[in-house]
Length: 403
Image (cartoon, rainbow, N blue to C red; front, side, top):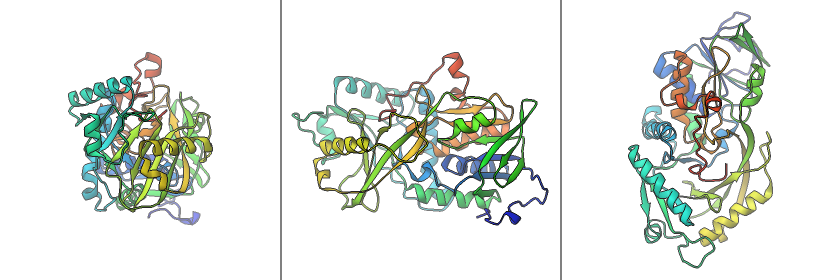
């Protein structure tokens, strides 16, 4: 990698205040994707990616690997579907098998309200050109036989939406693949380099201060999930988001028993099975604000109970480990991606539970905004100004779990 642990060889430019055409703050999924598309789509390679830890050390490896685009509103459907289409070609493009598996995503309905919301969302998806189906209870049982569809349970399965193109991918393998591609373009990947200040002169960004020295640039993108509010504060403005722990767990290795992704907002659990065999489960965010990558045990208890109720076979599984990522949550459960009050400074945050699946589409749009100074049409609706104009994009219903 281009990153170098020796401070004497940190910069390719010997200038005491090195200068880059663009700086990406955050070496996670969206930061790496942004750098990749800055080079691939816009020819910008004099770029630095600054990461306070190591590449992919944050939420990149603290997610549940699910990829889908079946969101309700046209604005969300547009960017997530673009992202899914990019996912479908990235294994070949990056020349690395990160185990992208389009096994289908089921969103279960347990109440009449769930049914109405699911049918509405499936119809909206089809109108947007996105594959979506409504399954009856019997069709759910045929598609995923291990789900308990008997009528007498506490949360009876009344049907489900199905996106067959949805699925999973291995996040750590993707971090390696995208990092290698970014490095191949000659972009500097600077690990152990925390941003401690943002230089603003006359309302325009001029560079950043870091634990390894100052860096000059008039184009800076903030792409650091869970710490966006801290970075925005360094630049003198506030973001309308909160940071919460989002917990998940994996089981011991099991034989392959689950052939798709199963999600249920009513009982607050979603589960898939990784290629190695472990069950991967997630739930809703913890209700309190925190920057700690741990969570309250009662959330884990509830999600395990919900999973066992939906799929009784899982009662025989054992928990191997749990973790928590720190997610930014906006008031309308939709991201903030675009310009800020500081010229030359863009921000990408607020994805909540949608960050992993949005990775390539987010990076594509963020790179366009940084390179041109104009929001990409797919990300324009997610501007910071919508909280002043009232043009919100309320995706709580399609977020799959409590946001």
